[in-house]
Length: 492
Ligand code: 5GP
Ligand code: MG
Image (cartoon, rainbow, N blue to C red; front, side, top):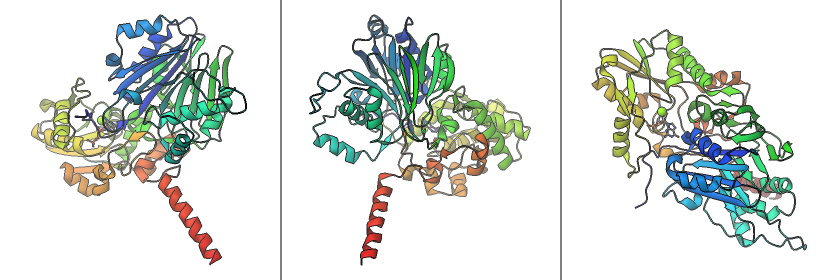
């Protein structure tokens, strides 16, 4: 029986980390850094390290604390490495098999002869990827025809295979050639024996930032990991930029024109409150989203509560703007984390029940505004509205600090099937009825964009609009068909 996390609504992508620091314990730093990124993936964790002669790797299932024990750490630390590469991940559907977990590793000792007498550069490579590549089927078939052997079913391996194919001499050049072949979302950290590299795709879908740590450097999905390690955020890796770190220092270069459209859902839900992404503090963004929500969707009530933890900053902003008290109406059980039981609606509901308990003495007889960052299936909110009523709330008004979630993500967030997204089946009034609330209000798309960088920045809004900044494979095929038909018309 495959184990599937019951939390199968949206599997939140991955977290990546890289450390280059001589004279520091990069293994323990890497291990702790992964804890700081744990919210980005809880199904597997791994660390690859290098001391200049080869790469050693450990990865395991589950939380960082489950994937590693002291002997794993000690074995890696005994190598006295100066490079560490880390990854936490949510698996895609089905069993979270270890082969697909990361960092991916290629020993490099059987790289092909390139036909011109120059042997493949036989260095080891390790790679950690956050994001999702699109339209990879054709490329996969091409590589397979050339004899490539796939060790995993993950799209990330394609980058590694391409890189190996092009790697005759210069790593940077080979990487640029490989990246020219792929599309979609990739924040990558990779390493060789003596280089640590960070890459962010031209759209900058997923975050990636660079920090200093003493004389060394950290690359991380989120600045919170840099702070947690006692480092200092230097700057974001820019969309279309590559950063190579070696003993001579940090080398920045651009491999593609930037076409920024970073994921707006990072600000709504994914990222940690204390991270700064592309210059914007996530907590402040969330509070501002809540303020804006109060302006757009006011309602007469007594108290504002949140669905902790992700709804809390928006609730604080909503309460401040509407001059209502913000109180803790729901107690969250933080130990109900990953629960590996068969998925299904009944167990999903049981889990929400275990996770949130209303505090009757706070909500009894009160008109409550409950704020959450997002509604996906509607399971959470439906249960919460009914338990709040059972606890004596006289009215329950639901406010959501993003627009209706209507379309799947193709760029690194594993969304439930479209039919399971409640906003694809009902309009707002239908959802209100389904969750049993007295009223329901979402933040508008315009409001959300205004709050985030005053409408000056470009974001991927795919989950709220169904329109994506990079054409999807079927759109491309349709486009090609249209072009062919047009051509046919001209000829005919
Ligand atoms: P629903 O019960 O409507 O399917 O999910 C809504 C709740 O899930 C909200 O509290 C929201 O904070 C949370 N949420 C949103 N995106 C994700 C995600 O990717 N993973 C998990 N575990 N929760 C999410
Ligand atoms: Mg939540």
